[in-house]
Structure formats: structure tokens, C-alpha cells
Amino acid sequence: MEIVNEWLPLLFITFLISSCRTFILEPRYIPSGSMLPELQINDRILIEKFSFKNRELKRGDIVVFNSPFSFDKKLLKLRDKPLPKKSYCFFMSLPPMSIIPGLGDRACDAYIKRIVALSGEVVSVNQFGEVIINQNKLNEPYLIKKCGESLFNQCGQI
Image 1 (tube, rainbow, N blue to C red):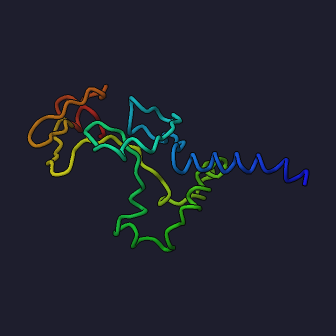
Image 2: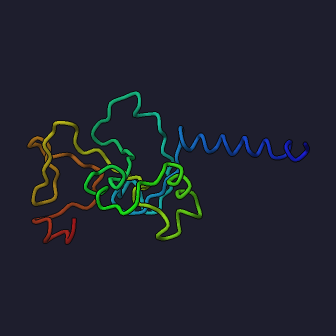
């Protein structure tokens, strides 16, 4: 009985923390520079899961979504095994599992991106790398490096 009294609080705390991660907050890290300068490579962030449930998304919002490898029909056809279960993805996202190369599944990844356009808008990118929405140039104050004459001559890469 003494063992139960010792382990019960630990099990409760473990359940509480795991529930928070699933329903309220989720820790993530930034593996690439696609969201520079706001999110730096290797930044660690907490994703709060309630904000967008009660309001519409708007341009400039930063969102987290499932990898296309978990829902895109073309990518799903390329799989040689079934999609992993949510429990597997959850377990594989915990340290130290998340740092072991080749152990995870791309379908478990989450992408962190900024909303550029909304439903029904027409988006294009001009030769200077500027985003055009419905024939109007998008103001992107978060960009620190802009291209000169030509996207490929001045920037080298997108």
C-alpha cells in the first residue's frame, strides 16, 4: 500500500502533463530557417492550442499544421507502410526519441508557417521575390533581406 501512495501522485502528475501537451500546450522546436527572423533555428516554443478555435485565421498569423505526408493523397500513395498512429507520433516526439535520426516518420512532423493568403485570393511571386495577392504587393515587414534586380541574380536562392 505504501508503494501505491508513493507512485499515485507521480502517475497523476504524469497524466496531467501529458494531457496538457495533448490538449492545451505542445512543445516544439524550429529545425530550419524558413521562419526567420521571428523564429530562429533551434528555438524552442510552446504551441497554445485554443486561440484559433474561437476566431478566424488572418494574414500574418503563425500556424502549426500536420505534415502533408500525413494527408496528401499523392504522398500517401508513395508510402510502403500504413500511417503511424497518433500515439506513435506522440512517443517519437519526446526526447530522446526525437533526436535519433531515421527513427521518426515524416507523417508525424508538424509544419510552422505564416499565413500569406486567405481563401479565394490569387497569389503570385514576381521576379524580385515579392508576394502579390490579388494584384497588390504584400507588405512583409518581417523580411530582413530583400532581393534586388532579379530573384536569382541577387539572392542566389529563394
